[in-house]
Amino acid sequence: MQKINLSIVIPSLDTGGAESMAYQLAKKIDKDIFNLNFICLYSSNGTPFEKELINSGVNITHLNKKLGFSLITFLRLWKQLKIHHSNLVHTHLGACLYAFPWTLFHNKKLVHTVHNVPLKELPFLHRIILKILYRSKKAIPIAISDTIQRQISTYYQLKTENIQVVYNPVNMDLFIPSKTTVNNGGIKFICVARLVNQKNHFTLLKAFSVVNKKIPTSTLLLAGDGELMEELKKAAIKLNISKHVVFLGNVENIPMLLQTSDIFVLSSIYEGLPMTILEAMGAKLPVIATRVGGLPDIVKGNGILVEPNDSDGLASAMIQLAEDKNLRQKMGCLGFEMSKKYDISIIANQYEAIYKKFSL
Image 1: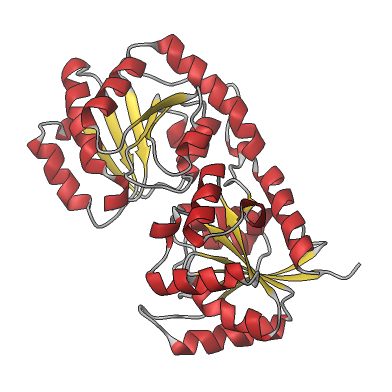
Image 2: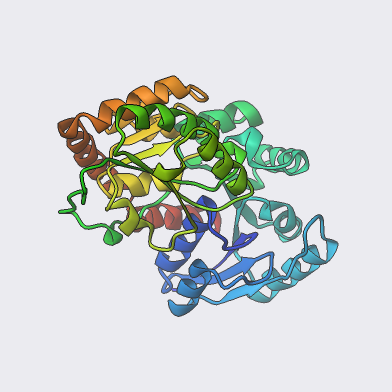
């Protein structure tokens, strides 16, 4: 059987949901069926994702793109795809802009995973190009949840049957099924998210200030880095909760961190389907999140949804779960069982089926 030459193209392998998904997929995909070519537009940063892919035998090509629009990147990517004789190109984030000329010219399909709500996923030019490619069936959109599928259908004016749905993966091997929360008397809330406006940590801090007054032994752990780090630290001081909020920066072993926490909280103003929610479910944590993007598709009985920017509603949900251990355990166990269907082995099989279908 002749292998399918597959190219996965992504801007970088920095910390992020799209990067984690692409990394997991590239590592798990059946190398006896697919000849994988993994391409990053930007230079190597030696991230954990990069190191683990290389250690698993995946070759990564870096095109050394600079910030901003780059004509030379079109040419470098064209050359790589030509050398590889790619049968199919799978893009993530803004990489679609640089890959589509090659796929059009060679009459190959471009598969593009939509990692966020369509309006927020990419700049205007990218979205215009994708709309043309989708409607001419030169590109295949993949939605990461049922809600995102409906939003893609509305935004790009596509029939839902022309939009593939493959949920984000979670590596269940990283989680210990018998996990019990390690707790020294206080509740640990954990949020794993980049410190950027989208994640709306300011509302989370405001909500936690209410929680901490009622439950003084509570702690909020913030894992992630970003441009708002210093502003958020100042906000914690202003809210008089700085002694109870721990800024951890980027954390390599997220599963271990989750499994030593009690409640996962995410206060985003928009989302696709956060990988961290699935990881929290794998760690048997109850989830509190905002009702945005694909979150209602996976937070069903295993957590509580609140409206975005509602600090009072967020605080109320946090207090409710903090004070009810039985409810936390019930939601955590349900989330763990739900997360099994998103295991990377299942998700990889779904992507492989799509690759085979559209590489013909």
